[in-house]
Image 1 (spheres, rainbow, N blue to C red):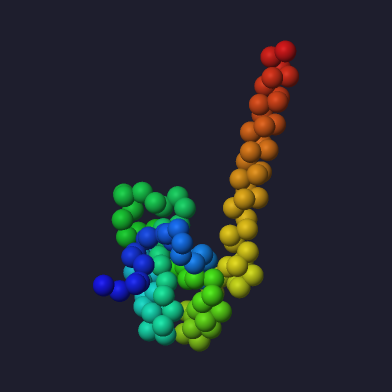
Image 2 (cartoon, one colour):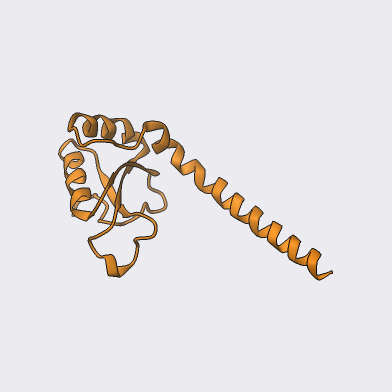
Length: 123
């Protein structure tokens, strides 16, 4: 058995963090990109894009190609040399993991403001 992560499997605890290096329009395109990376020795995993993680879409819908943080530059070089078109910019790939907490904080602030307004209206 190989140590390659399975399709659509997220990073497990204890593993290196994964970041997005490319997007694909469907599963076949994502597997093609994953194959290019695998041929060059860069392990990757695929993930359905948010909003398309439902069984009805099966192989349809956009996918994200993720690699370990330590392999981001190698993956970008491989994808740029293969002329696949636009890939995720390096700054976006590495900084993408930092946006989740800020989004969560913004949502929590919005909920707090709504709750405060509701209590002010009721008193």
